[in-house]
Amino acid sequence: MFLLLKPLLDLPERHKGRRAMAESIAQSLDRSVAQVYRLAEIARDGGVAALARLGQRRDRGQARRLISGPWLAWAQDAAAQWAAEDVPTLATRMRDAVRMAWVGGAPSDRQCWLKATAKVARDLMELGAPRAVCASLLSVPCPRRYVGAEGQHFRVAGRSLRDGKAIYDRHLTPVKRTAAGLMPGELVCGDITPLDIPVLREDGSTAYARLVAWHDVATNWLWLDAVLLDKGQGIRREHVAASYARMCERAPFGAPRRLYLDNGSEYQWDEMLVACKRLADLTGQQFAFEEAATTAADRQVVRSIPFRPRAKRIEGLFGNLTDWLGWWFGYVGGNRITKKVATLGKGVQPAAFEAVKDWLNRTLADYHVTPQPGAEHMGGLSPQQKLTQALESGWRPWKIDRLTLALAFADYEVRRVNRGTVSVDGVTYSGDCLMAIEGRVTVAVPRILNETGAYILDAQGRRILGWVEPEKTYGITDPAGAKEAARRRQALNVLLAERIEQAGGPLNEAALAGTRAELLGLDATLDQAEAAAQWVQPSAEVLQLHEGIKAARARQIEEINRRMEVRMTAEKLNRLGVEDDEETRLAREMGL
Image (cartoon, rainbow, N blue to C red; front, side, top):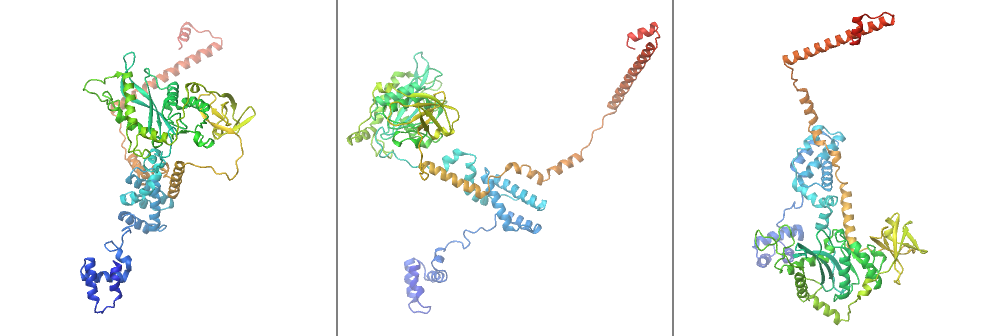
């Protein structure tokens, strides 16, 4: 617009061709000549910026009031009664308190304002402000737009101190990962999932089998083993180890180069890893258990981060698998509480376990030849086509025979950890996992691997703790790498820490407890109620009964004293050698 108006601006005010040029510009802008003259005047006075601000308020972006009208009125009154702080200082104090309340975990705008006003009132009272000024702040209504604007920047910091799950789901930027470039068997995920189809045990009872699943990430190929357990039993190490052995022997993608396993205790992966480790020893692999920095990347067992569903590709594949399992007539769905049934009032109809296994194998065959356009690394190909593509490129699966799968050798020695190291046969091993361990551990030294190193297990030899290597010296400038996911997590932590520091830390609710009651005069009200209390007097019958009890007690005391006096007189006569007469003797025997 400014370029169209510039020729008109360059002409003198009284130029003869000014009107004709204005009409031409008006036709180009679809405006009237008067509007063109007005635009030219605006452009002459304010330039391009003035034209860009057309249609906008001149005070756009500026608050009409400081925090809010009621608060501003309170601040002006407070500054008039107490000259120690002016209105801008009070506004800054109020802003900091609001931020601290958000960082402290305020659940709503109103709760944030209540805690922030209590904080400011407490601080002002401690600085010597009049009590009435502090108390009146508590009655200022919540300026929701102001409080909400501050919460937009500081509420996340407060949530990070209380709700890690919400931070992970709503704020932590996920790391974008791709499986493109992987070859079959290069990365295999393992997990366990229920088969939501009721089947019959040999005794006729109904049960739900469990699936030991292995997912080849490169081809999205699934290897499933259905296990029917007895009542009250769960998947054990031998089930998973047997499935792993069958996969290595028969799966078209071959033995895995790397494993990606779940971290949940429910699946007992730690026990299964002992068998996997020994199998890996025989095939020339090395596995590092939660010690990725000490082992080559192509020989690692990758552990999914606990409670991080994004890290588990196989979980998403289980969701897709339900679309195929749903074709079975007796499929009950994932919600066992509200099972899918054919007829209301009747239970689920179980099927023979072998029949379900046969159908599952044939269904998986259909799945493996079905294109997957939704998977970004599949390129619209099916698992079968991806496998064929890898074979045509020269890839060959890595097979392990059954005898080799049955063998696993290692020397186990119990040693005491000394400053993050253990010594076996004169060799000192060190590893990150040892620095946090005190006491004895089991050191498993493989005998068949060319690489030097050892596995560290707990003292009982049941849980694998890490991988150690012969102790060596690192250069002082040798940097350690970090994964992108960890870097982002750390970046988020740093950002949140800056926010928390900027706000001055979370609001100390314990220190503010009772502030509102103190400022609003609860103690004075209680004292007034105590002073106004009326004592209820007992009735005449109660007073008469009380006097009767007192008189009876007085007579009882007088009788006791009389008996004591008679006894003491009798004792004095005996000491003088005077014999008691018959009546006195009887009275003494009676205790009188």
